[in-house]
Image 1 (tube, chains in turn orange, yellow):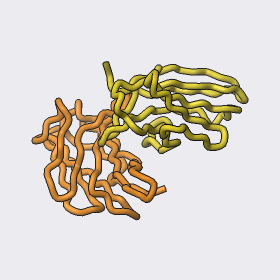
Image 2 (cartoon, each protein chain N blue to C red):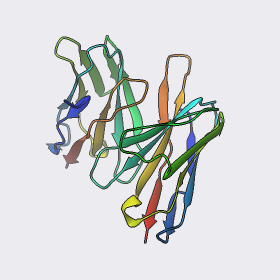
Image 3 (cartoon, rainbow over the protein chains, first blue to last red):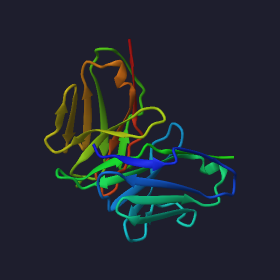
Image 4 (cartoon, rainbow over the protein chains, first blue to last red):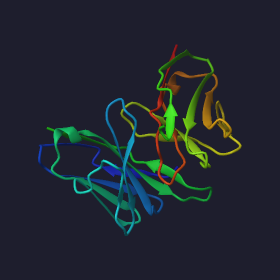
Length: 117
Length: 107
């Protein structure tokens, strides 16, 4: 299957700092990428849809000024958690949509575990 | 009603058993669904796509029941390595995940 990478895989930061997470589709072009967040023992929650060349679409309850998304190319989307606080500690996962020959399939990055002290 | 709902389990089954999970969906216009598998502290991985005629891949069979608006995943001859959380995923432009069903296969 297609490969999606995420960087960094793990980050620990102090409260009040900003953290940038990168999501790359390595062998296909993704006009659409998605950002999810998963708290322990809970399901993945969609945060936002990232569209190449346009503004991201945020889900209800997700602050767009806190979670900045940039999708500057067909293979890269970034999520910046601004002024992070301990409650932002979570597992952040991106996915990229591969249109493919047989229809859309989404492939996930390996996730970024964020810990805010 | 949530767009996608699953029984969280856990399902504890012995090796070799057959186990089935169901997932209900609310959008009757939905066309396709997916089953993902997620291991602890890992990202979800695509297990199977589920289209109108269902899908079978080795020990795994996925079915779609439009009349009752649910999809199912059947695992035959369970292996220890099948232990994971199985996520039912809805078919909109953006993937909506169910809470997942935890499966634990024991020796």
